[in-house]
Length: 569
Image (cartoon, rainbow, N blue to C red; front, side, top):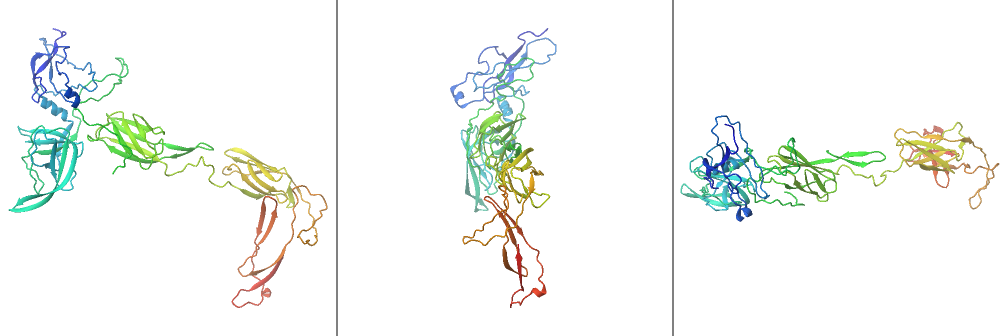
């Protein structure tokens, strides 16, 4: 006989109350389809304020006498709760007689019981207590804030008591205890950690007395650590954020997370607190592009059950360069990246802000990071370079001084004919002469009679560039004059045989002086030519030679030989 509507129904468990012994075997009572509060009762004001986990067990039953094999059946949550603070989650234990306590253990198995903690419960603790005292050796690490521990009494026995506790606050003090050994009082120091709990104790837990060996009584309560593990598959429902078709392979939903246990923690960001090269920077675009890599600085933040959340704060040291911050994290096995936009805003798979003045990073992730993964932050700092692109040249412009070579030493440059060309950044630059002044893509002067040029380019010549010089020359007219003696003011009047061209007159005169040259000394002569703007100087150093024997005079006591010589130019 084929399956008909109503052949597959939901049945109540033997005990539908939200108590430790609730659940159990299936019953013959069927749930009424579409009826409100058939499984969960109404939410009380107390539950809405402090939160609550309610666990109920139901069974799927087949009400059909046909012997045809049932290939399988699926259960779905068709409509999630309208209240955002209420979540529905399903799981299967594959155990037809599991009670609420068994289901709670399965849910809690995400934090599996680990090894015994380095300390024990000090003396007895009772139901409803919201704090415990733990005894340790002096110097041992106290319980971690926010971490989950397990208190176990009569472990493995029929009357086992087990409760997970979460540390809210811890204070540590070193106390001196006294133990009677061989009828003698022996003092010893021990560390006592008083821990405030998020939830009160549900059972009485007998503790151990203080002993000098720091060993607990084997018949008393054991304190164990917890280890995070993926405990199994939970099923829930989430609303779509984008309309989809039945043939789509990708769905966009509001969230892939659900609330299993109410959380009393709240996340608060605290910035600017001092805790106890994926990108390049462009320095210039002209005359050529200059890029430098950032100096990388990285830090990692380990995610565990204590600090898992969406809000994190980092402190960048040294100060971050705008546009160089990258934050990577993993959620559900996928890698997500957040970067700053250079204006103090974090963008990508999350958001937040960064202060480039203090280095504080206020980060909000888009998804809860995986426990056991790390949040990696990298940033660059401007410590290995300084951009002076807006400050102009920081070095002195190049200067060139040279003499234009001609066939005859008596030739001079014809005024207004000099043209100099060179390349800079691949562009030909041109310099021209105007009445002895250089203009165009360089400044400087030219002395026509001596053909001496002083050139100051406005653009840096390319490496290996050559100066292309084009000019007209003509022969100089040389006259040897015998001037009269200087007048009382020191002036000498000269009369030339013909009218000189403007800017071409050059006068050389002879100066005679008497010098002495000792052994090891040098005679240096200077020839100078001047105009109103520049001085050209040629220094000549005669070759030194040993004086002849006949030129040596009497040698003064303690002195070197003195040679008298007269030079005339």
